[in-house]
Figure 1 (cartoon, rainbow, N blue to C red):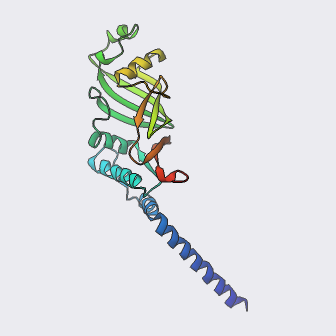
Figure 2 (figure 1 turned 180 degrees about the horizontal axis):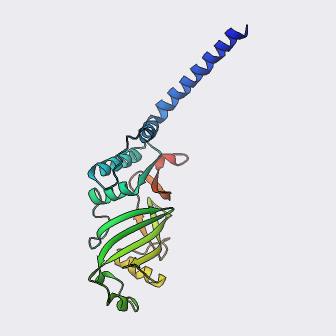
Figure 3 (figure 1 turned 90 degrees about the horizontal axis):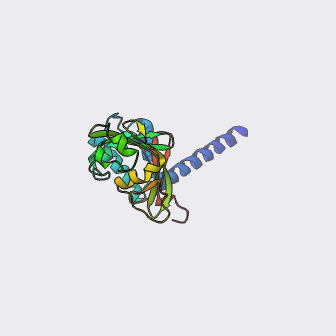
Length: 219
């Protein structure tokens, strides 16, 4: 008697699992396919920026905007590819050879800039006198929520030619980079618009995660 009963119970469990998987595939198919591609290694594995990586990252942004996924993750090389091939005007034109790194919970943006773009304040003028006409710049920041489809890049550290700037110079330095005052924006932060379809962003490990509108309760 137990043999047929066990066989019937096994069949019920299998059918239930198939129904659940079918429901998940119907409702979350795009996210499951994306996860499968990542686990299967279908995601481009280039270690240098490229147009292919920019296209792949842009496809993630398109999925986020369309509501097909609840979030999207981007590695540093993908972000660098977007910056080079899709969003060249995101940074001021005088910042040359920009480079993006992700370090734990922080974003590091490096580049080269003309020395005359440094803040014209006491202390900085003396340092500028011994620097070359174009110098290395590195900005380390963390993301803070700002609302209205934007986040704030709050500055933790700025170095010019590997020389740390005093915190009192952060404001003038950000102004040279295009910062504008607005309500709720800390003095040591610059507002950054999020891509369409994204409501928040954070850095986790070596990835930047964009959260979509479909991840919000009640949406």
